[in-house]
Length: 90
Length: 168
Ligand SMILES: [Zn+2]
Image (cartoon, rainbow over all chains, first blue to last red; front, side, top):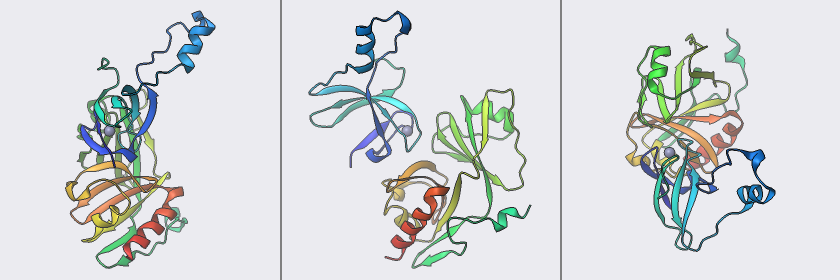
Protein backbone atom coordinates (compact mmCIF):
# COMPACT_ATOMS: atom_id res chain seq x y z
CA UNK A 1 0.00 0.00 0.00
CA UNK A 2 1.22 3.52 -0.86
CA UNK A 3 1.82 5.87 2.06
CA UNK A 4 0.85 9.51 1.49
CA UNK A 5 2.19 12.34 3.62
CA UNK A 6 -0.73 14.44 4.93
CA UNK A 7 0.53 18.02 5.42
CA UNK A 8 -2.02 18.61 8.17
CA UNK A 9 -1.48 15.43 10.19
CA UNK A 10 2.21 15.78 9.29
CA UNK A 11 2.73 12.06 8.89
CA UNK A 12 2.58 9.36 6.27
CA UNK A 13 -0.76 7.61 6.22
CA UNK A 14 -2.12 4.67 4.21
CA UNK A 15 -3.49 5.48 0.76
CA UNK A 16 -6.89 3.93 1.58
CA UNK A 17 -7.60 6.84 3.97
CA UNK A 18 -7.39 9.33 1.08
CA UNK A 19 -9.56 10.35 -1.86
CA UNK A 20 -8.31 11.93 -5.07
CA UNK A 21 -10.16 15.14 -5.92
CA UNK A 22 -8.92 15.96 -9.41
CA UNK A 23 -6.51 18.52 -10.77
CA UNK A 24 -5.19 21.15 -8.36
CA UNK A 25 -5.01 24.93 -8.67
CA UNK A 26 -8.21 25.34 -10.70
CA UNK A 27 -9.46 28.73 -9.58
CA UNK A 28 -13.17 29.45 -9.82
CA UNK A 29 -13.76 32.58 -11.91
CA UNK A 30 -14.37 35.59 -9.67
CA UNK A 31 -17.08 36.85 -12.04
CA UNK A 32 -18.92 33.74 -13.32
CA UNK A 33 -21.58 35.68 -15.21
CA UNK A 34 -18.88 37.58 -17.09
CA UNK A 35 -17.45 34.38 -18.59
CA UNK A 36 -17.93 33.40 -22.20
CA UNK A 37 -19.29 29.91 -22.91
CA UNK A 38 -15.81 28.81 -23.99
CA UNK A 39 -14.20 30.14 -20.80
CA UNK A 40 -16.86 28.49 -18.65
CA UNK A 41 -16.42 25.21 -20.51
CA UNK A 42 -12.67 25.40 -19.94
CA UNK A 43 -13.17 26.03 -16.23
CA UNK A 44 -15.67 23.21 -15.78
CA UNK A 45 -14.41 20.48 -18.08
CA UNK A 46 -10.97 20.99 -19.55
CA UNK A 47 -8.19 19.33 -17.53
CA UNK A 48 -4.57 18.45 -18.04
CA UNK A 49 -3.68 14.80 -18.46
CA UNK A 50 0.11 14.79 -18.27
CA UNK A 51 2.38 11.81 -18.56
CA UNK A 52 4.56 12.39 -15.51
CA UNK A 53 4.44 15.25 -13.04
CA UNK A 54 0.86 16.22 -12.14
CA UNK A 55 -0.62 18.62 -9.57
CA UNK A 56 -3.61 17.08 -7.84
CA UNK A 57 -6.00 17.78 -4.98
CA UNK A 58 -6.31 15.04 -2.44
CA UNK A 59 -8.43 14.76 0.64
CA UNK A 60 -7.53 12.93 3.86
CA UNK A 61 -11.17 11.93 4.03
CA UNK A 62 -10.84 9.07 6.55
CA UNK A 63 -8.41 11.06 8.70
CA UNK A 64 -8.28 14.77 9.43
CA UNK A 65 -10.77 15.48 6.64
CA UNK A 66 -8.67 18.20 4.97
CA UNK A 67 -8.10 18.88 1.29
CA UNK A 68 -4.48 19.46 0.27
CA UNK A 69 -2.39 19.52 -2.88
CA UNK A 70 0.08 16.94 -4.13
CA UNK A 71 2.56 16.51 -6.94
CA UNK A 72 2.33 12.94 -8.20
CA UNK A 73 4.04 11.23 -11.10
CA UNK A 74 1.31 9.61 -13.19
CA UNK A 75 3.75 7.04 -14.60
CA UNK A 76 5.38 5.79 -11.41
CA UNK A 77 2.52 6.76 -9.03
CA UNK A 78 5.19 8.25 -6.74
CA UNK A 79 4.24 11.31 -4.68
CA UNK A 80 6.94 13.96 -5.07
CA UNK A 81 5.52 16.28 -2.42
CA UNK A 82 2.31 17.34 -0.68
CA UNK A 83 1.42 20.77 0.70
CA UNK A 84 -1.45 22.56 2.37
CA UNK A 85 -4.32 24.09 0.40
CA UNK A 86 -3.67 27.77 -0.30
CA UNK A 87 0.11 27.38 -0.52
CA UNK A 88 1.76 28.26 -3.84
CA UNK A 89 2.10 25.68 -6.57
CA UNK A 90 5.31 23.61 -6.30
CA UNK B 1 -34.24 9.18 32.00
CA UNK B 2 -33.87 5.42 31.84
CA UNK B 3 -34.90 5.45 28.18
CA UNK B 4 -31.34 4.78 27.05
CA UNK B 5 -31.25 1.53 29.00
CA UNK B 6 -34.10 0.06 26.99
CA UNK B 7 -33.08 1.31 23.60
CA UNK B 8 -32.27 -1.28 20.97
CA UNK B 9 -28.60 -1.19 20.07
CA UNK B 10 -27.36 -2.65 16.79
CA UNK B 11 -24.89 -4.91 18.62
CA UNK B 12 -25.35 -7.39 21.49
CA UNK B 13 -25.19 -5.96 24.99
CA UNK B 14 -23.15 -8.92 26.23
CA UNK B 15 -19.41 -8.72 25.51
CA UNK B 16 -17.79 -11.08 23.03
CA UNK B 17 -14.84 -12.72 24.72
CA UNK B 18 -12.18 -14.54 22.72
CA UNK B 19 -8.62 -15.62 23.44
CA UNK B 20 -6.68 -12.45 24.35
CA UNK B 21 -9.33 -9.94 23.33
CA UNK B 22 -12.86 -8.88 24.20
CA UNK B 23 -15.30 -6.66 22.34
CA UNK B 24 -18.06 -4.87 24.18
CA UNK B 25 -20.52 -2.04 23.89
CA UNK B 26 -19.27 0.95 25.89
CA UNK B 27 -21.26 2.42 28.75
CA UNK B 28 -23.59 5.26 27.67
CA UNK B 29 -21.51 8.31 26.81
CA UNK B 30 -22.32 11.70 25.35
CA UNK B 31 -20.35 12.70 22.27
CA UNK B 32 -20.06 16.13 20.71
CA UNK B 33 -18.45 17.31 17.53
CA UNK B 34 -16.56 20.54 18.20
CA UNK B 35 -15.63 22.81 15.31
CA UNK B 36 -13.73 26.10 15.52
CA UNK B 37 -10.87 27.82 13.74
CA UNK B 38 -8.69 27.58 16.83
CA UNK B 39 -8.47 25.52 19.99
CA UNK B 40 -8.46 28.78 21.97
CA UNK B 41 -11.93 29.69 20.70
CA UNK B 42 -13.25 26.43 22.16
CA UNK B 43 -11.30 26.83 25.39
CA UNK B 44 -13.09 30.14 25.96
CA UNK B 45 -16.49 28.44 25.64
CA UNK B 46 -15.77 25.14 27.40
CA UNK B 47 -13.38 26.40 30.05
CA UNK B 48 -11.12 23.36 29.67
CA UNK B 49 -7.84 22.72 27.86
CA UNK B 50 -8.32 21.76 24.20
CA UNK B 51 -5.47 19.88 22.44
CA UNK B 52 -3.82 21.65 19.49
CA UNK B 53 -2.05 18.79 17.79
CA UNK B 54 -3.96 16.45 15.48
CA UNK B 55 -4.20 13.05 17.15
CA UNK B 56 -3.68 14.36 20.69
CA UNK B 57 -6.20 13.93 23.48
CA UNK B 58 -6.69 16.06 26.56
CA UNK B 59 -9.25 14.97 29.11
CA UNK B 60 -12.21 13.79 27.05
CA UNK B 61 -11.32 15.85 23.98
CA UNK B 62 -9.56 14.38 20.96
CA UNK B 63 -8.17 16.56 18.17
CA UNK B 64 -9.23 14.93 14.86
CA UNK B 65 -8.30 17.69 12.41
CA UNK B 66 -7.06 21.30 12.27
CA UNK B 67 -10.56 22.57 13.11
CA UNK B 68 -12.30 19.48 14.45
CA UNK B 69 -12.45 17.79 17.84
CA UNK B 70 -14.42 14.93 19.39
CA UNK B 71 -15.60 15.40 22.96
CA UNK B 72 -16.64 12.39 25.03
CA UNK B 73 -18.25 13.07 28.34
CA UNK B 74 -20.45 11.45 30.99
CA UNK B 75 -24.11 11.05 30.07
CA UNK B 76 -25.26 13.64 32.62
CA UNK B 77 -22.96 16.48 31.55
CA UNK B 78 -24.58 19.76 30.54
CA UNK B 79 -22.89 21.42 27.57
CA UNK B 80 -22.76 25.07 26.57
CA UNK B 81 -24.30 25.77 23.16
CA UNK B 82 -21.72 28.35 22.11
CA UNK B 83 -24.56 30.41 20.65
CA UNK B 84 -23.34 33.65 19.11
CA UNK B 85 -19.70 32.57 19.26
CA UNK B 86 -17.56 31.38 16.32
CA UNK B 87 -17.76 27.71 17.35
CA UNK B 88 -20.06 24.79 16.55
CA UNK B 89 -20.93 22.33 19.30
CA UNK B 90 -23.04 19.51 17.91
CA UNK B 91 -24.48 16.54 19.78
CA UNK B 92 -23.53 13.47 17.72
CA UNK B 93 -24.21 10.91 20.46
CA UNK B 94 -27.04 9.26 18.49
CA UNK B 95 -25.02 9.07 15.29
CA UNK B 96 -22.53 6.50 16.44
CA UNK B 97 -21.95 3.81 19.02
CA UNK B 98 -18.73 2.99 20.89
CA UNK B 99 -17.15 -0.41 21.07
CA UNK B 100 -14.41 -1.21 23.57
CA UNK B 101 -11.74 -3.56 22.24
CA UNK B 102 -9.65 -4.76 25.10
CA UNK B 103 -6.95 -7.32 25.88
CA UNK B 104 -3.38 -8.16 24.85
CA UNK B 105 -4.57 -8.88 21.29
CA UNK B 106 -6.57 -5.63 20.97
CA UNK B 107 -4.14 -3.86 18.59
CA UNK B 108 -3.68 -7.05 16.58
CA UNK B 109 -7.44 -7.39 16.17
CA UNK B 110 -7.86 -3.84 14.89
CA UNK B 111 -4.96 -4.29 12.48
CA UNK B 112 -6.80 -7.15 10.76
CA UNK B 113 -8.73 -4.45 8.90
CA UNK B 114 -7.18 -1.10 9.84
CA UNK B 115 -4.11 -0.13 7.78
CA UNK B 116 -2.45 1.92 10.56
CA UNK B 117 0.59 0.62 12.41
CA UNK B 118 -1.03 0.38 15.84
CA UNK B 119 2.13 -1.10 17.38
CA UNK B 120 3.48 2.46 17.06
CA UNK B 121 0.31 4.25 18.11
CA UNK B 122 0.88 5.75 21.55
CA UNK B 123 -1.55 5.51 24.44
CA UNK B 124 -3.67 8.67 24.44
CA UNK B 125 -3.63 9.05 20.67
CA UNK B 126 -6.83 9.36 18.66
CA UNK B 127 -7.60 9.38 14.96
CA UNK B 128 -10.24 8.87 12.37
CA UNK B 129 -9.32 5.95 10.14
CA UNK B 130 -10.90 3.02 8.35
CA UNK B 131 -11.56 -0.66 9.07
CA UNK B 132 -11.90 -2.52 5.75
CA UNK B 133 -14.35 -0.05 4.15
CA UNK B 134 -15.99 1.33 7.28
CA UNK B 135 -14.90 4.65 8.76
CA UNK B 136 -14.11 4.54 12.48
CA UNK B 137 -12.51 6.74 15.11
CA UNK B 138 -10.08 4.98 17.41
CA UNK B 139 -8.77 6.26 20.72
CA UNK B 140 -6.06 4.27 22.48
CA UNK B 141 -7.14 4.47 26.10
CA UNK B 142 -4.49 2.07 27.34
CA UNK B 143 -1.81 -0.29 26.09
CA UNK B 144 -4.47 -2.99 25.73
CA UNK B 145 -7.62 -0.91 25.38
CA UNK B 146 -9.13 0.92 22.41
CA UNK B 147 -12.30 2.95 22.16
CA UNK B 148 -13.81 2.51 18.68
CA UNK B 149 -16.45 4.94 17.51
CA UNK B 150 -18.53 3.76 14.54
CA UNK B 151 -21.64 5.09 12.85
CA UNK B 152 -24.73 3.26 14.06
CA UNK B 153 -25.72 1.83 10.69
CA UNK B 154 -22.26 0.27 10.22
CA UNK B 155 -22.04 -1.08 13.76
CA UNK B 156 -23.67 -4.46 13.18
CA UNK B 157 -21.27 -5.19 10.33
CA UNK B 158 -18.26 -4.03 12.36
CA UNK B 159 -19.31 -6.21 15.30
CA UNK B 160 -19.53 -9.22 12.98
CA UNK B 161 -16.15 -8.43 11.43
CA UNK B 162 -14.46 -7.91 14.82
CA UNK B 163 -15.91 -11.06 16.38
CA UNK B 164 -15.05 -13.14 13.31
CA UNK B 165 -11.46 -11.82 13.38
CA UNK B 166 -11.22 -12.36 17.13
CA UNK B 167 -12.27 -15.99 16.83
CA UNK B 168 -9.30 -16.79 14.57
ZN1 LIG C 1 -4.59 14.38 7.60
